[in-house]
Image 1 (cartoon, rainbow, N blue to C red):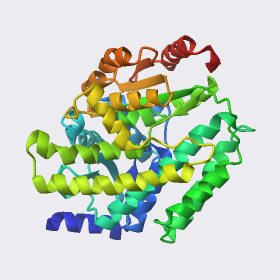
Image 2: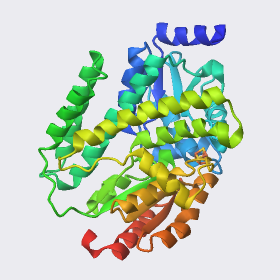
Image 3: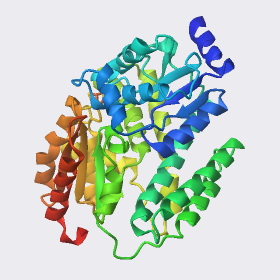
Length: 411
Ligand code: SF4
């Protein structure tokens, strides 16, 4: 580690800088922020949302840029303008995969936008691709493993929440349980109970069991697409809530699937692109460990009223039928493989969320609709574009059309 990097992050910790994290996935990000706090960083998830975030973003980022970048900038600026922070003790944070599309330019794009208004505010990142090393948060192995565990807890809560939300006995019941689970888990993690997964999962399952899922379930609608837009309610205009209102169960894939996708891509880059052999071996080992950790959720959910997430190995197995595993730009082979796997598990209605300006995900999302329909003629996919100018009504009407086409039983 360079001297500068060491000193810089020590300063952030010692001087208690507030590190603002975009709220792509509220449950997961709150847990990950807690993990950062355990390593001395005063991390906080940004809460601000609404139209004003999009308008702020448009002021600083050209509307040709990817929509997620525009939203992240808008959210940072809006949060900084709230007056809640000492502007000399705050930093903005981004996770970054460093993909070959515009993803590798995100950091400089965001830094340029934020520093135009606040030159003293640093932009730091979490990335494993060596981008802007001096501003990349150092990640000791313990931090990584605890972070991965947080992702899995987040997945479990999201899965239980999405499956029970449509059947709550009063409005807000599932949200109350989610809140309770969050308090419980944060307390446990605070006391170092990161790896008591069996006990922690059992608590969550018991709590959500208060809501009974009827035998005849509502139609399940899958949500796939670019990572930020498919998860963030700010970006996708509250898609999960909308699907629930339309009489469906929303199925958001686990975040661990995207992480597994990133790790396995590194593992196979040696074979595909001649990158370091050692790096690929290490990545493969981490992938194996992480996959085993993720599978534990399936075992815990066996015999319960819940459907567990798919084994990532099964999703990977779908790839060879539909796309080359070397397609790694954006969400690459993950999007069509997830759609195929969903179909095989009875999810025949899928919303494919794509941000404006995202070429790779248009190719592997919208571009794969035809080959997928060839394989699965009764699969219904609604590719929806999200951008600051798109109206919610238009997007919802397109989804309604899909629901009307595929199942009157959805109503
Ligand atoms: S995947 Fe799409 S949205 Fe994400 S950085 Fe690349 S081009 Fe932008």
